[in-house]
Image (tube, rainbow, N blue to C red):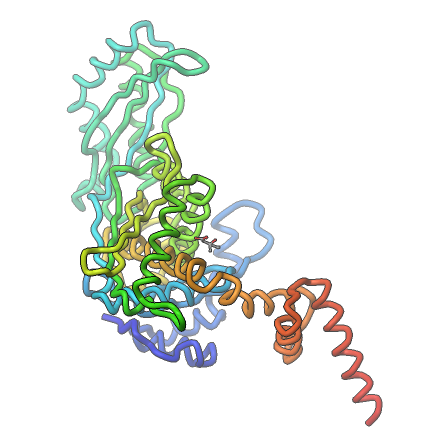
Length: 435
Ligand code: MEV
């Protein structure tokens, strides 16, 4: 099991960090090489993944520390361009660690596939006929993927929903509930749906339209919860008690207002998406599921809750769909995704889902703490200034010089960075010309 508490990791050089993480995660030399950029995704591999490939797009790969989920340490790989996400999660996970770490659970990995049935003379009667044919439909679906059924996955249930009103009149939505085991499962589900379509037409007497997975994976929920001892939330001039109160108030804002809830949930997905990307998972599917679930009762709500418990400590929880896998798709075809899973050290999709839920909760805690207790600008400013300096064209030692001036002046804009850069370059030239 990797050790996730690596104090001072951020102070090492990139190569030293990679070595620390490699040692902790038990990586072999070729894997360390891949981290260094030498053997990541090759143009040839990229060319086989999508269409019209012209290159390979890079993102920073960071590792969040301190994450404990269900008593297990996890180093958390994150592919993300936004500053403060990795540091934020590491910081929040340290606070949670002081309260015993994250606890998490998941449902069975059941996805829902949908078949749209149109042109029905009597939709209600067709619905009953389809429900009566449950066993036939399940057997047909199970015959499509003997490997998955051999591993204990496969068709679990058939539901039929009557959509009485739509812009084109009534229709049925036939749901195939399908256990995809360690895979995200889109391919397996879509294949099974294709196979069911002729039978669904015969039994219903209607015409099949779409046959596609639903991203509202509400049979595959992941949950995480945690406790932060209030002493951990003390800041200079702010007692721990007050820190707890500020975070609960920040949550209350999201609970009362969809405009705030959208941003609150965006912060959660900052972490979830970064880990999804680093492990080859479909982050758009997770986004779609999370936001649809957030509005399941007709009003958009935060995915987390934060409260003060009887002892005065902060307790938080999260629940959302988690269609993530450790098998199939890019988790295998992308060399760095394989590596990401190795660093994370999860055994299977359910454990991955539990870690992702904990990451979402931790990332939210980091954001709320920063916003309610520090003001987000303080933490963000240096990293943001550095990005602005680079965007203005600074390189090498000039990055730090421009960054320092931007912060000192309190104006972090590219036009200002360009002017400072021009000044510093002119100074440099004057100095070297004078030699
Ligand atoms: C920025 O990417 C994310 C935050 O806006 C999240 C939040 O407001 O809770 C800081």
